[in-house]
Picture: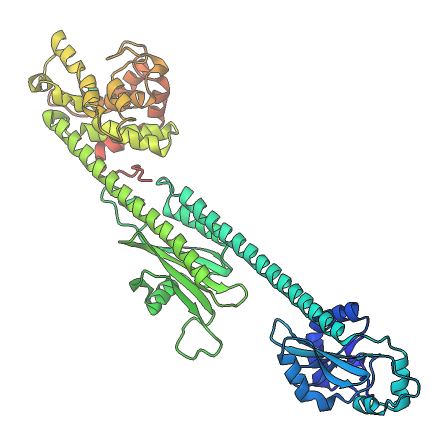
Length: 555
Ligand SMILES: [Fe+2]
């Protein structure tokens, strides 16, 4: 039966307010009604426990004026057990209290017959109680099967327990669903943090990891936009162009801010001074000065390793226009902490790499100082070797190795007699054998130094010859490490190109002729080919002696 057409047993109709209230309570009422009907084989009239208004009028119940029962209704519905609210032998009115999960109170009531009336028994009193005519009451009584009052009460208790149990089960199922949802969200959050920690490789730049973090966070944080503002990096003295000199803004979704606006917002919020995530939830009635009306909700967290800040991470506007809470703030804060630690590691690595480069340069200066006529030779060999390696398509790690190897290739000369090194005339066989030892001495010097594994083969084999006639191991062809083959060409080029006290640097044509003749004999023909492809640039490198190390890879 539709509630808006429901007639009352007494012939009146429900008010609009009552109808609306009944529609709201209909699911609860219908469930209670269904259980009562199964238990008692009849429908009960349902009344609002507080107002006493009829929510559902059972059609087969005797007519009654319920307006007189408001107080009784309140008393019964506030209780917790079935009771008889009318007892005019042989008619009994059973009433059951009920409260739904929202705290709404109800009373369900139905009239029962406690015994069969005698023939010609006067039913005037019970008929008055129900507001019926005597004949009508007699006809209704004749249609009923008598019930034991005790059984009616006991059955009522069972119905109430049953309904309560069903509601409890429903509440538990809802709680279970909520827990499952929370568990899924928690799993996604842990998965995000796990993926981020797996991505904490030093070789990955903060920009690359930040972009990944934003992409993954989109799946977990209910924000319309995500933004990551990365601060400029400290400038590396040896390679200033490798550092980020300006802030960088990465974003996903609707960021709504450019770099100056983001910076101004951080200042406005005072985020720069706090290490905790800041949550902003604006309401439509907020009246204070907020220069970014398009931003209603926001979380901002600083990227910090505990000492320095490397940027800021922000979630902008909740997708449902709801408030951001602790869960989102904690997750954003965790991601910011991971990015901050990564930023700290990169800074530390840069410092170490710079220190290493500084030490290596100091060592190479020491080598050159032993032979003042070749001043700057190691630096030039390093640059030429890197340019040749680029020409041969080597990766950035190999370029770094070759730079260090170029600087250190002759470090073993530290162990060679100064008199022989500085000798301007031809060396005797014995002296030459002594000089040849510098490759092995250099290998021994660097052998125990961390980070030098890749450099060692170049230092040891940079005097091997493609035809197997070099030293110290007479390696041939591709048995000679590629780095050593490259440094061999770079070393020879600078030696021939540079001025010496006893001779001028060779003319380019002469150098090229020597390389053509030596390709496939002394030098790797592929490296010589690379030399010819970029010889003008190599010439400039040796002339200008660049001071920076543009290829030094820090990441
Ligand atoms: Fe050498």
